[in-house]
Length: 154
Image 1: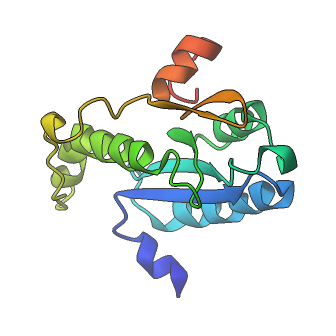
Image 2: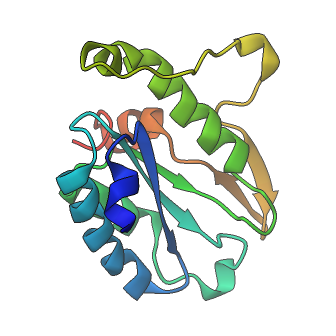
Image 3: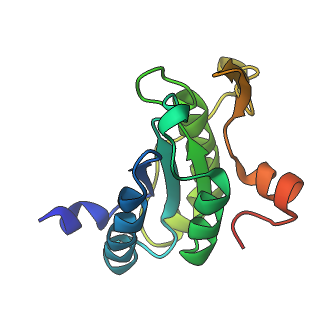
């Protein structure tokens, strides 16, 4: 039954728990299901959640990036649903990407209702906060270029 929801997906957020490596490995099945049922140009976003639990973290950023590359994921983020860290930026970045590629969906008879006004969210991109005595930052497409010399998750 769940697969039926994938059929008209414009984007999908695949969430795992950074304090439990098994949850990252299990996302591979969701990714396979999305690839089988969602439109070819569906934007996939891998999100490591619970980064507020840094002392219990077992999945480092590097592992997230390698996993995303292996599975051709479009975007990678770190979030905390508890503290709301990274949530707004993740949604904004996904919406921005949808807005950039909305013509692809129109060509196949689908439309999106996304229209972004940058003035509504000034300074949202790449925001950082100090958490657990370290700088934390969302991983966005730009990070792949800046930090790893890659574009997106090639």
